[in-house]
Length: 233
Image (cartoon, rainbow, N blue to C red; front, side):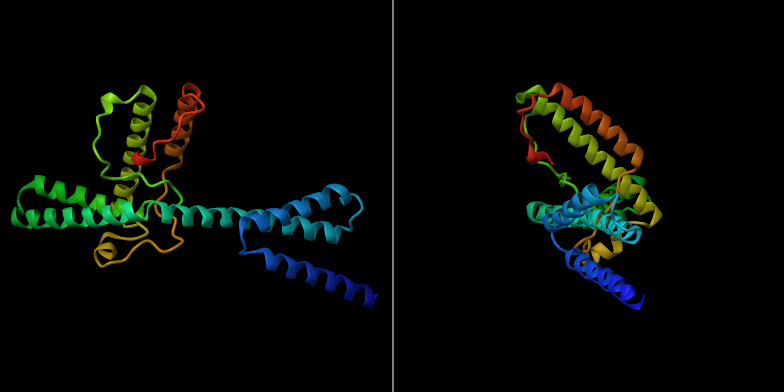
């Protein structure tokens, strides 16, 4: 009996060590481990002891959760590199505009228009810094181009991007008012940025649901070989 318990404990310990070696690694390694366990369960589910079956199912659940984390880390890393320069310049521009608006508001304390302008510039600053790194960055100050010269599909893409920018600004405005931004305005002005693996602000689930419906309708009307216009993202 003692020998059986020892073997069971050793097997469990071995599985834990194997799982620990995979957790925190790249997505490909995790996917391979998931496939290995899924194949094992497919072939031997009916013959595996209950203890082993439970252990494998728990490991599979942990690996699937870790895979999502790994894919998120990869996406953050990719977007951080791709949009680093545009975010850097927009951050500088937004803070400069905020500083100018602050001086004007202080010079005209009784005029609401200057206070409103200052609030808009504050939202701009918080937008640039708190924009989620898991998303393709949507420029706050896109270069102006002659939209009339573009085809209809591109125009619709620009409109969709504009609507998404607006949705993120609304989310920033709410969190700025609530004091729930990942990086507050005061922290940004003090030099703080979104942490390395910070996900930033998140859109309301209703907004995301509506966006998916709009995207689905857009995709149905858009030729499959159309390319994305990254410039406006």
